[in-house]
Length: 88
Image (cartoon, rainbow, N blue to C red; front, side, top):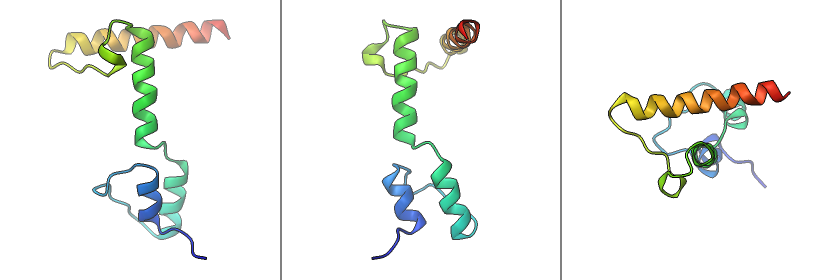
């Protein structure tokens, strides 16, 4: 048996090969172990946006060049967080 090298761990967790891993192997293992895999983050953000804006296309994150759409999305997100904190 052999253990995975840090690059293999990064690939398993969906990090692109262009992602730069720095430092000794022990630090890379720790960083990858504490990391949120990019694909998981993408799905979580899509779910949050879908909850905040049910009219969004297939729940996919819509990014526009004008700051208005992005800002309104941020406002909805922070309002949701504030409401969650009030419930607790």
